[in-house]
Image 1 (cartoon, rainbow, N blue to C red):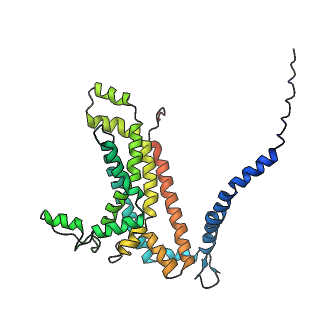
Image 2: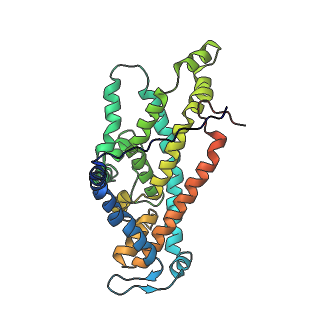
Image 3: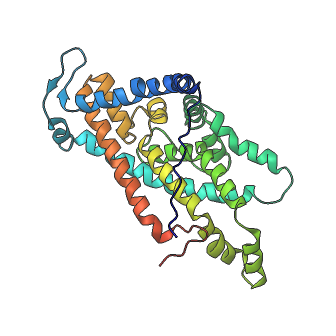
Length: 308
């Protein structure tokens, strides 16, 4: 017996369809215009300027890829990129270790836990400029409290920001302190680990270190992955503390990539060259992010997923 399908009745549009649609587009128009004018527009303009010799006061002169070629002949560019990579390695490593350690402490069932969490959240609400000024005072060799404490316990004072050997690491310490977001994300990740798994491991005889290594870390690996990606991106965008605290010194030991870019653009007015630096930085961050994503199947565990 042949059964013929009945034709599907056409849905009638509401009488206010076009009015509602227009109103919806009007609501999102400010956001769309903001993206086009203040985000995508400048990005396209900088992409064009990166192919030109542009001094702001003159007319851009198209020179093709010459700016990108000149970058790899520029010793200041190589130096600033090297310093940024060294900073990134130290910052990302320390921020993940310290952030996870503090998150573990902040998930313990102790008195005053809310107060401790609030204290560690405070760096987030402190503006970057104010934080840099505060740490510049703390690091001061003559009247800074950090060197005061070191001398009080019989240790020699350290010229934190005035020494080539210590300036970069001093900025790493400050950045780890200011990176309270990592701690908060790790706390959220630790709270989502099922207690049943930890209890089962405890019953089977696993000690605290074994439970942490074989259960906590694998279950926390998606959180580690997220913090690793954001940490790498943040490290390559580091600028404000170096600008306020060291101005690239001493002896250009804190001459970060973004500080070099800032000088090329606003001190020497090399806008075309600076635009090329910005796009190359974008490419570097994309490549590093993709490398982390490609490696994630090897070490990131998602609940219910089986790795072959």
